[in-house]
Every structure is written in structure tokens, then in C-alpha cells.
Length: 333
Image (cartoon, rainbow, N blue to C red; front, side):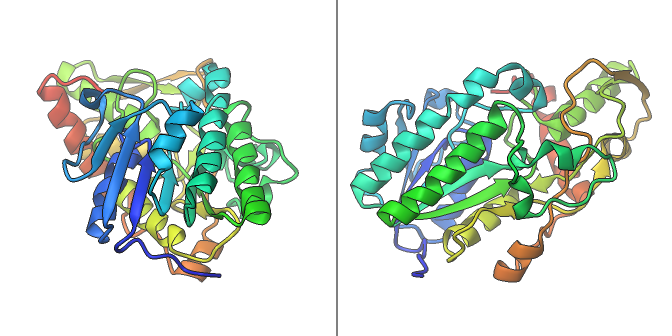
């Protein structure tokens, strides 16, 4: 299987106005890409980051013609565009999440027509069988645990279906597809309020709000015993680059194996902020599965990849950025 390098390649980032996409554009330039076309549906002032060296375009990638325009002249595609957010969003917007399948379908068709050599698709740990995530003390999820299929309703089904499309576009048409299953990516320059934020950003914001308001209380969704692993953005983008350039054909985990409870995540945030808060548990709020963790056996075996940034260190960087934004009166995009 041919290994494709980013250096000197012309590449497209779909969803470049988003959290991961914005960071990825910068990394691709650092890796020596000849050009980066950055595409998002949002107007430029709503992008989390804009790299002036990129060919920045506003296109609705749910439309086939827009995908054809975006893919023209590209050698590599990073398909990160999706309508998604944290658990509160995906549990209450299942149809919107499913409609992202239009982006994935049209981008695969456009990539094939444009003669793209390599197509990277960002899947999610939400594809995993829910029956394997019922215990807090969860066994780390191996790639094979996505089947028999019982993914997160809505968002997880869309991701799993699109994984299969990538597989069959490779088998039937020879498109070089690569798939990574992201496990809870966090870090600076991301969503931290408004309903689409994920747990690390939401907890960071709540702890900082409690600190600055003097109201030393925090609402936690669920009972706080649910377990997760969280991957810092720099580890994520390195993993994306490594997988894109690899010869790995099957979907592969990309996440941290450092398992914590939500209560422990709050402990970390409190320690960083220097406060201790009264915890109020909202048992009716969306909380997702009871336990989820990444088994990194395959990605470490094939690529030597393992997250290098501890959760506490990543949370400190994330909270410092969110606090700066809060004190400056910024609103999350």
C-alpha cells in the first residue's frame, strides 16, 4: 500500500472553521503542505482560527456542487465537517447529526471525481456498541467492539455508516481512505459555552464562573461517576497526520487511555482554579454512556502513537485560555 506524505501536497480541510479543523490547518502548513484549502459553512468571523496562508472558502458541503468545487485540484482531503457538539447537543439533535451523512457522501463522490489520492474521515467513539459501555469501570474499547452495531443513536449511526462508505469507496473505486475514531478532543480555541461544548470545556467554564462570581457551586450532569478519557488537541492533530500518511485501512482509535470520572475531572479543574465547590447533580440531564475509554493497542503498534499530554496539563492550558476569553468578555462561537 502506497504511503502518502503531506509534504508538498495540495490538501483540503473540510470543517476548517471548527475547533479541530482550525488547529489542523496550522499543523498541515508546519508539515510542509504545498497548499491548504480551508472550507467551512460558517462566515469567516465565526471561524475559531483563520490562517491567512490558506485558501479560505465558505461553502455548504451538504451540497454536491460545493463539494466538487472544494475538491478540485486536491491530492488529499481531511473530512472533519459535521453538525455536532457535546452530549447535550447530540442527544437533542439526532436528525441534524444524521444529516451530516450528506457531507460525507458528497465529499467521497467529489474526491473520487477529482482524483484525490488520500481521504481522511474523522469518525467518533460514539460508533461503539452501547452494551459495552454500561459499567463505570469500563473495559477499554477495541476497534472490533463497534460490532455488532449498536452505536449512539443519531450521531453514532451517521459516523458508523460513513465509515462503511469509506471502506467501500476504497474497495470499489480504489480511493485511499483512512478513518480515525476520535475520543473526546479538547483544548484552547474551541467551543466553551452555548450548548455545543464538551465536558472539559463545560466544566472549565462552570468552575471559572463559580470562582469569579463568588457563588461556589457547580451543576454536574449525571451522578459524576460516569467515566471518560480526554485527548488534548495537539495529540489529536499529530495522530491525524500520522494516520493520514499511514497504510492503515481499517478504522482506528485516536484517544487517550487516561480514564477519569467526571467527578475527578471536576477535581482537576477545581485544583487548577484554586477553589472548592459544592456539587449539585442534575440526574435528568444528558450524560451519555456510563463508561468509555480508548484501547490504544493498535495505534501504538502501527504508528508508535500515544498521547504525550497529561489531562491535568491539558486542562491547565484550556482553562487559562477560557479564563482569558471570559475576562475579555468574549462569547464562544
